[in-house]
Image (cartoon, rainbow, N blue to C red; front, side, top):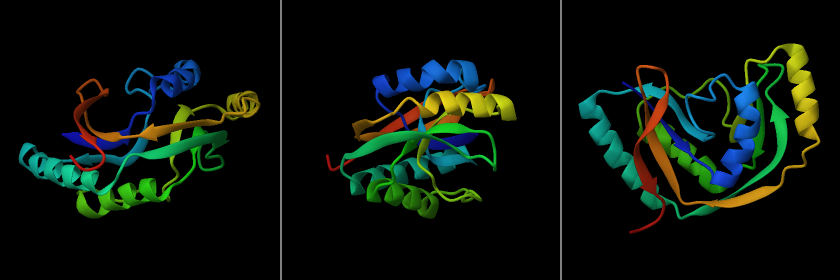
Amino acid sequence: MKYGVAIFPSKKLQDLANSYRKRYDPHYALIPPHLTLKHSFEASDSEIKDITRTLNLISKKYNPFSIQVTKVKSFQPVNNTIYFKVEPTAELEGLYEDLYTDVPGEKPEYPFVPHITVGQKLSNDEHSDVLGQLDMLGIDHEEVVDRFALLYQLDNGSWTVCETFHLGRD
């Protein structure tokens, strides 16, 4: 089965992202707005039990922390994905590194860029138009992250939460 690890932002930020995703992201119906910490990886039922224990240990290493969304950016020329940029923090970088060190799965070919996707698979013209519109938004949002989620992919391609891990000590 395919699994992944992500942070789901507040409803306020999800609503803002979804206001664009419903038009510009073909994955809109498959997963809510999120910040990916670990891309999809395969694991068996027995492996996922060990992975869940590892994720629990990782979650205890980090206290809740703030994230700040500061602007709209794009991955062009690599691809036409548009996203809300999440400023990197030591906690985000640490979580990302721990997940790729301690949990099975290949590290992505690109460096970690914390973000929340709002549009993808756009034509070049559509990408330019949408990025120009969103660039004028002037996003400045800050919130506290206190959890991350282990997700699994259903047969229809959608993702659902398997387990949530709260940051900090019990």
